[in-house]
Length: 296
Picture 1 (tube, helix red, strand yellow):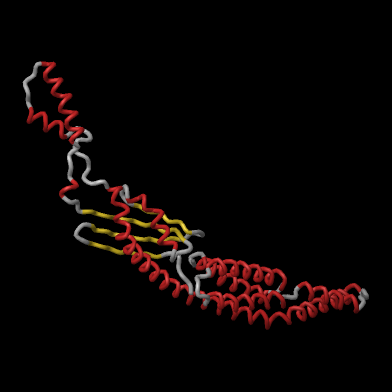
Picture 2: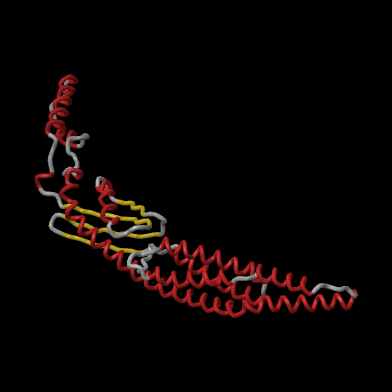
């Protein structure tokens, strides 16, 4: 079954204490690469995200975006009393040294704004371990939706592959029918040319030399093996497409092999009609090569 390397999936979760949104975007890549975009300290969860995604996805760049909001409990809003006492004590000493009157209320207001007195509520890093069991099912859901989209795109690509494959098979069959006539046409052209030279210059040519020349050309232009191998590759391509796991690397290699056989046919055949069919085959193979870049 073919899987596209591109796709999108998202999932959400909301409870009394936690609101979570996860988005996944998949792009082409020869290998699997996972990147997580999230506010600190949740960006530290990238290795955990990769472990989950790797269970399902084998190739591609996966861009994950995590948005999370946590409702804090009343006890999580705290004042750092040690810092507060230290600041107040130091400032009181300055007031006494300068002979200023005590302005306790105003002093306290100013001290509360100093660094470290009122820290950010809750220690987010400390909650990562507790939050991950809640985040993982949301990530699993997003991956499942991503996988569904990749499967749908994969089915569309499979139809396109089969169309291009049938197009190649059609032109290859025409090449197979034309191939035996190439040597015959060369023999007739050579015979006509020799007869013209003989008439013009009154030169004698041994018949065996003509046969030898035709035989050499026939051997050099014989494309039977290449045609057979290309036909075999087309059958193999269809079989690989039906494998249970997405076979992107195999299809990529096989497409390269088909290009190689087609180029050889074009260079050996030395025939205008066959060359036209070779051009059509190359066009279909180029389309297949573009598609196969997006197969996992």
